[in-house]
Length: 314
Ligand code: NAP
Image 1: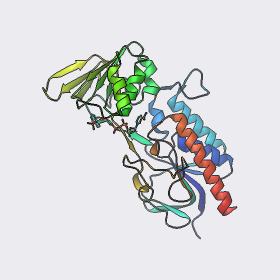
Image 2: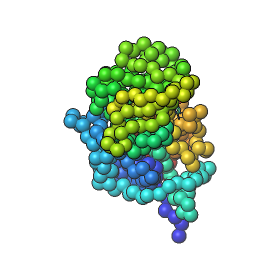
Image 3: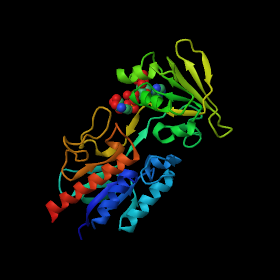
Image 4: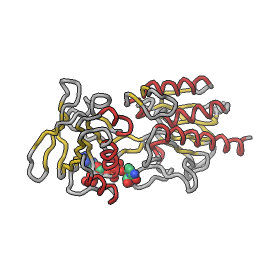
C-alpha cells in the first residue's frame, strides 16, 4: 500500500502556522501540523500581549497560542511532534523526511519562525521572559514605565527598540560593542540625538544581575578599550543583536537571503521559488516580526495553498 498523500503539511506552531492551520482546516483540507521544539513559537515566551487586536485588556502569550491551537483542532487539524530532517521538493508529491519516516505532501507551508540571537552571558537565560530580559520592546516595553532599561546591539533593531522604549522608560542605555552604529543613518542619528538615550559605546555586556532575586537589578558591562567594568542600574534588558531564522533543512532548495531568511517570489509575500511550497511568519519576515503580521502571512499562505490545490487537484 502506498503512503497517503497529505493535502497540506504545515511546519511550525507559532502564530503563522496555527493561522494557516485554522484556514486550511476550515477549507476541509485536513491539514497535518508538525510541531518542533518550541510549540507555540516565540509568543509563548511573552507574558502579556497587549497589541494583538481583539483583546482590549491584553492576553497571555501562551494562552493566545493555546486558543489558536484549540480553534485549529476544532476544525480537524492534526498535530504531530516531529522534526523535519531533510526534504525532497524535486518531484510530486513533495517529500518531507523525518529521520527514518517520510511524509508525502501536495503543498507545504513552512512557518518555522526565527530565534532571537542571545548574548549567552550569565544571568541572561535565567532572567529571560517576564523577569526582565526580553527580545521584544513592542511586546514588553510598556512594563518599564519610568524605569531605566538597556538595549543591546547596534543595528536597526537596537535603534528602533531604543527609540520605542523612550515612550515608557525614564532612560535607555544603548550598549554597543563598537563606536558607531550599524543601523541606517536616519535611525542611528535619531537614536543618538534622543535626550532619553545614552550611548554606551565600545562596550560588551558581561553579566545580568539579579538572578538570586528573580528579577533584573542591573547589567554589568565592560568597556573593550579600557577593560573597565561598570554596572548600569537597569530593570529591563532588551536583547536586539539579530535573529536566526529557522530555515534549517529547507534551504536549499528554497532561496534565502544573506540574513538567512526565506525569500518569497516577487509580488508575493508567501510563495517560494518552488510551486506549492509557501513560507509564512518570522522565517521570512525580518521587517515586522509581529504576531499579527505572522498570522496574516499564515492566512495568505493557506489561501494560496488552497487555490493551488483547487487548480491542480480539483
Ligand atoms: P543586525 O543588523 O545584524 O545587527 C545586529 C547588531 O548586534 C550589530 O550591531 C552587531 O554588532 C550586534 N551584535 C551581534 N552579535 C552580538 C553579540 N554577541 N554581542 C553584542 N553585540 C552583538 O540585526 P538587526 O538590527 O536585527 O537587523 C536585521 C535586519 O533587519 C537588517 O537588515 C536591518 O536593516 C533590518 N531591520 C530593519 C528595520 C527597519 O527598517 N525599520 C528594523 C529592524 C531591522 P556589530 O555591528 O559589531 O556587528
